[in-house]
Image (cartoon, rainbow, N blue to C red; front, side):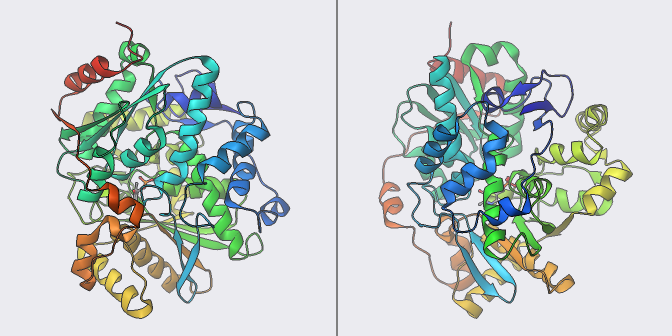
Length: 468
Ligand SMILES: *Cc1c(COP(=O)(O)O)cnc(C)c1O
């Protein structure tokens, strides 16, 4: 499989280079030339397989030139061996036709582990083959950073630098990042928002000099390997409910649009998905964009679902690329307009194409708390605040279409956000034991001002790959 940039000005690459590149040199995102299709019989045959087996089956067409079948199977087996639940991504029913897909059984209690554990193994393998070192730089609204650190800590070929918005991640999220004491892990508390951190990251990737000097590699949700790894649980959960013989809808708590994009890709690959419901919190750029056709970031409002406190949903660019009939000039024009005037209008045909597959619901703070309380009262099941936005959006979908089952993606374990849970139900959920123990360890991080040059300098002076 070859990959092209959504902005059309970067070279086409194979999977191994896309894996290491993250963002394309023209500022665009890599997307496969075509989506491989799984026949209904192949989808049906996923039933009864282990999650690791299903992963190898679903993602093989994207990367068969880089990884042999045997290596891929070994990597998927190893990636999910540390999860606390045998099913890796189990389903729980909480109401008629309403299911929760638990994606929080990995080492950092959030769904990002599912992709990141695999990504770390794949990157290390490619670097070993090429006898290279790389520098991973990531921006995190909380969970990506911890997942990246868990996936890359202690690896000889990689140094990890994680930027997080100072004071805007939960205590548990911060400690999961700052209590890791491996020398190749560097956490940076940026004096700014997640969008500031992401903007710095994008600039670093566009600085060709810096990029080659430190062997910059990206692991943010724009990395195609993460999107691909995330398609798998759409398949396994839909199959568990009767796909491909039955249509299923999904409701997805959304920030950077990576997770829900994976659902869209699964649909392109042949999974019969009825609707994809984008759930946002008060940071509702996507809900506004779908309603009005205008993509316009506003200031970020801190909420109880901080991993969704994002107003620049990077992966939306991939959807827009497809929705414009894969027109890189339209994408360049849209993002030039975003840079210059702070917004762009989605072309009408593209907007219609997006509306044909996606709903969006913006869920406020009080509604989120109400949903946590309601689900707990009705079933005894505790939703984390991110998941609660998804469940609220799923209920809205069921009102419109009661006959199609809806799977709400549960993106985090409630113990990651104990304050929000306590506000809603008066109880503080406890993290699993192995995680609780680590949270008392000493913290280690560097505070830097919101200044790209400062961040670049810090990385250059600490990265082992940097050639002076
Ligand atoms: C990252 C994250 C999200 C948002 O996922 P995107 O892929 O950025 O849309 C939602 N919930 C939690 C708990 C997360 O960590």
